[in-house]
Image (cartoon, rainbow, N blue to C red; front, side, top):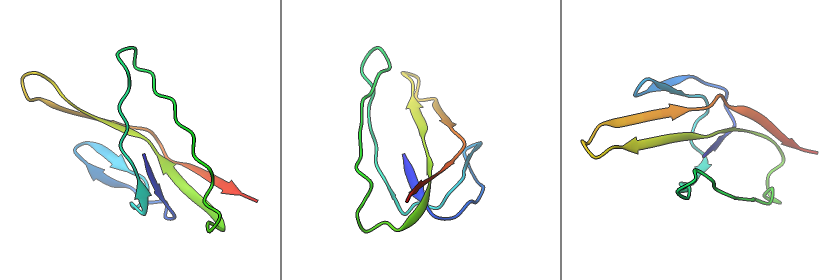
Length: 77
């Protein structure tokens, strides 16, 4: 998951990064592909952020696969 303030498009391994990396984190799904996460909007954040989620997977043969979502604009009023 990547959070940023700019709407950009930078190709990384065939998947574009749609915002600069200001904050983000890694998470792992369980065997069913499920992951639960919640985040409180930072009190210091005034305005909006672009958010993008992606995956990086290395299989048993060492083949790297990357996928990414479009970014969305999230705002807190």
